[in-house]
Amino acid sequence: MSKRCFYDVLGVDRSASPEELKKAFRTLAKQHHPDRNPGDAEAEKKFKELNEAYDVLKDEQTRAAYDQYGHAAFDGGMGGGPGGFRGGPGFGPDFSSSMSDIFDDLFGEFMGGRRGRRADGGRSRGADLRYNMEITLEDAYEGKKAQIRVPTQVACETCTGSGAKPGSSPVTCPTCQGMGKVRAQQGFFTIERTCPNCHGRGQVIEDPCTDCGGAGRVQKERTLSVNIPAGVEDGTRIRLSGEGEAGLHGGPAGDLYIFLSVQPHKLFQRDGADLFCHVPISVTTAALGGEIEVPTLAGTKVKVKIPEGTQAGKQFRLRSKGMPVLHGRQLGDLYIQVGVETPVKLSKRQKELLKEFEEGSNAETNPESSGFFAKVKEFWDGLQNN
Image 1 (cartoon, one colour):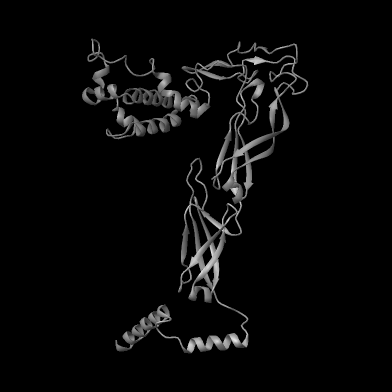
Image 2 (tube, helix red, strand yellow):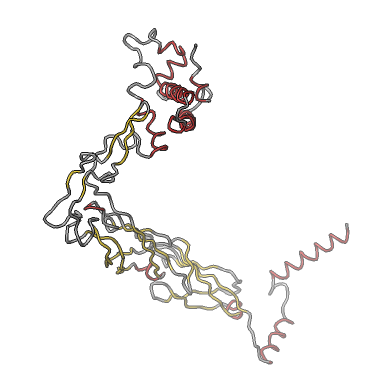
């Protein structure tokens, strides 16, 4: 019986990319894996066929040979001499490499996933920690040194992190002989699983430390100093290496990540390194011009000249009066946006003066409104003429 085309076996086109080949193989291999189809000879046959096809097509050289000569390239007539290809596909030397991904998905610790990884006494790395810190905009402008209190797991001082009672030490696990894993024969291949006795550590503690119960670490609150650089933005992450949870049985500690959030400010809004401030001015100042004083985050006052006839929304740029750039020497700008305030609770005399002003106004004194209503008139005239 002739072999099926390897591309048909995987259900892909001949132009399929390596990623498409791998995806198709993983999907079908999961479906037909013998452990998912116990006693099903047809599933086992398809599983072997899938592995054979993928073992050829995953390699550029063997795929090129297959594309040119088909199955004959591996039947002994094409590759026996110099320049030939490695032994035929199937359950040869590359079986574990072609199957490692699918085995990891199915069992988590099959063959390729942890192959060759010896136990190190269970000294696993500690977990990373997250600490949320809220700061003011002034803190972000100047930078600061803060003290934080972090509840975490630290190395046990009594056993120095080993987990064993002082005067004793962990011993080699008798179940796995220190390998941290055990093997079992299943079907046509060998499965490696984490040792159920030592849980992959390769060692067991016969006389555990009474203070930490054999874990090598205890719960404790620590006080840490954090340097917050000038220019940090909302959402900035600061990493403190080795300040996370202590590892099990003397393993390395994780990291501490500090996430900063900047409080909203009463006067300023921030956009990167630039600051924006809305400043209301009186009608007379807008009309006649004048000078106003505005604050900066540096604690100083800056005078801003308001030209005659300033309109609401006008922006004035104050160079280098904004936020510092993180890890740089530059400063952003401060933008002052003026809003013309309409007076309220006018006295009788003030109303009279405003009426006199209105009576003396014309298109020249109010060019924007005059121009707008002129356009409105043109619009209405155009509708009436249509």
